[in-house]
Length: 243
Image (cartoon, rainbow, N blue to C red; front, side):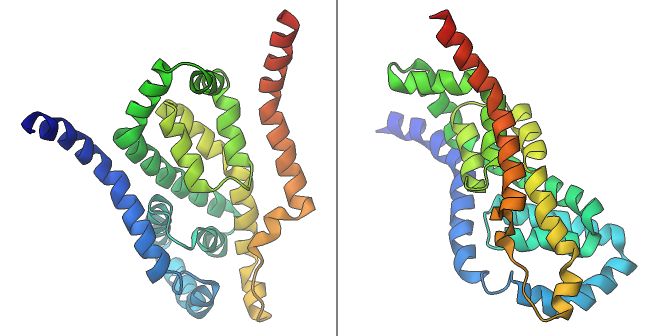
């Protein structure tokens, strides 16, 4: 009994960060959904712009910190935060601030998942046989392409895109680089929307976050997805010819 307690205790401690993220995410989904909205931004836009003009650096640091927390704990309002970055800081440096914050938050989730579950799961997959082993090997052989794909495809939930790499043993530097570069297209779209929020609010309208799925936006992103998948396709063709 003592032996089982001693062996399970470290595992429980390691899982605490991920458990805390999930718990805060659930609580935040019910308590913050009415606060991180366009209406809140609309009502406070003049105060935010005035504070930015008086304390630009502090505003930028606070914005990045708040956005990082939103991503880390998967709180509602990530799209609003991205647009707020454009509203406050224009397309540049707004896009840079958005990408930095989202990458930091994603890295926190990745590290929590890998520390709590990822290492053990990756080791089990590595030592397994059959289909599971083939899946793991397939991901390992095409890590860069897979990482960019899950970032570029809008249909992949951001939280899932942070967890999966941790579960299959992706190195930290690959995760950070692919996340930072892979989310730039989507971040640029939402930041651009945010940069035009002043005119939208003046007309009494509400911006459309679903614009990323419109053909003029989606098709170029899908083109990037195809480019990211190209190395895997070429590798598959090369293997097929070899056999």
